[in-house]
Image (cartoon, rainbow, N blue to C red; front, side, top):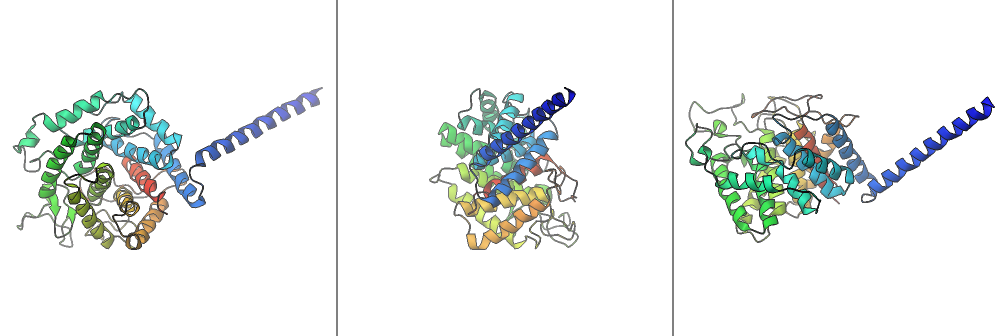
Amino acid sequence: MQIEEKNHKMKFIYARVVLAFLMLIFVCLESCQTIVDPQKWDHKKAMLMALKWQEEHPIFAKAPTDWTNGAYYTGVYKAHQSTNDDLFLDVLTQMATRNEWKPWERYYHADDLTICTSYLYLKSLGIEGVDLQPTDTIIHHHLYKPHAWKEGNTDKNQQILWWWCDALFMAPPLLTAYAKMKNDPAYLDMMHKYYMETYELLFDEEENLFARDLHYVWKGDSTDVKEANGKKVFWSRGNGWVIGGLALVLDQMPADYKYRLFYEDLFKSMADRLIEIQHEDGLWRTSLLSPESFNHGEVSGSGFYTFALTWGINNGMLDREIYEPAVRKAWSALRGCQKADGMIGWVQNIGASPEPANHDSWQNYGTGAFLLAGSEILKLN
């Protein structure tokens, strides 16, 4: 009797194991149905592992709606757009619901708008329950409500609304997507107005790169900030914010928009410069013109570059023959920075200038940059 009971239990356990295994196969097949190429599935699997690890290790600088999560979830929504995998969509929807569809608190600060880009994406999919009222409010306040940053009467760095180059990732993609959703080019015109202020303040026409802020813009005197090798300071992630934001803007901007050519030309100029200073290992250094300062690759800047350059190939703006070897080498190097559990390492911490990273340094925006890069690599045929 005991033997029969034991056999019955073993059969039950075996049946449960088989059922679980079959369910796992079904889930995997369902998840992989849009990507049948083995190499592409390998890329997607790496992206899913990064997502899983990041969701299990939440982090933010100020609040769940701050710029760090804004950048991370931009990567998540682009990953869903490329894969149509429900795991990415579920994560996005849960995040937006937790946040009650709100941005962070500073209407005048571009950083606090970024998270809203994911909300607009969910709205574009027809997801039920989307509440864009908080997004409407912060956009209108940001563009039209008076603030000292707009008037140029603050300290020497904060002379314009978007006074630091990171802002060109934080606000313009949202405003471009918002203009598209509203079918109202007035929002694009306001975006262009403030974008040009930043461009004229921070873009270096000799190097085709952006200074992080006025502190790093050379004036030709003894106060100029230099690297040890005497060159200008150009921060990798800062320029990653810019060109990554440019790709997002161009992706949403109408082909016939009156100022589109400016953004295309800027994108191509930066792209040309960036592949000139890419390192043999595929990654860029945190100080773009002084690689010896911290002689190792860094993932957040490199991830944004890989995303933008691959987007340029996929959308016919960059020569495939020239750029494809560079982005494939970069993606291979980014994959090498992912640990076995999915964590993305070699990410410079929060900052405003070149600093080192290491195998164990991570941030959510680094995961976002990795997902952005993967979202375009998957489209590269």
